[in-house]
Image (cartoon, rainbow, N blue to C red; front, side, top):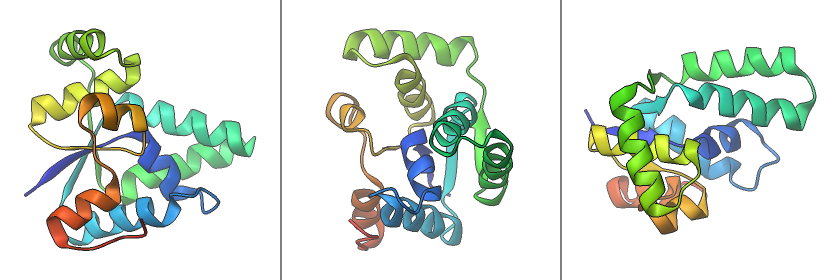
Amino acid sequence: MTTVVVDASVLVAAVLSSDPHFAAASGFLEHCLASDVALAVPTLARVEVACALSRRSGDPTTTLDLVTSLFADRGLTEQAVDAPLAAVAARAGSTLGLRGADACYLALAVLLDAPLITLDRELIARAGGITPAAWLRLHFGERAGD
């Protein structure tokens, strides 16, 4: 089974139909679910997604229900940000000049030897992340809503 680490930017875009990356992000998640691709996230992803969606909607109750459903329905595997992951994140983040949360996603990708799927241009430029559409093209030859 292939494993990928998914950044919160992809998860947020996948549930907001108004997001310019909605088609690519939601298509990516659907394809992974159908293709037995494991989706891994650090535990802080739940917090990042909930806060980003709540800020946009202004409705925390609906947002929390949506996030709970997203994490359950998409088969996301949460990995604790424990001491070993935090050590890798601190080293990578300080070396590459990343934000703290972004460094945790990168550290998880390093520890799992998995690609980091993101819509964050900084993670792509500084940490070798790849967009959902680009990853699908590389692995399945599909465009998935560039």
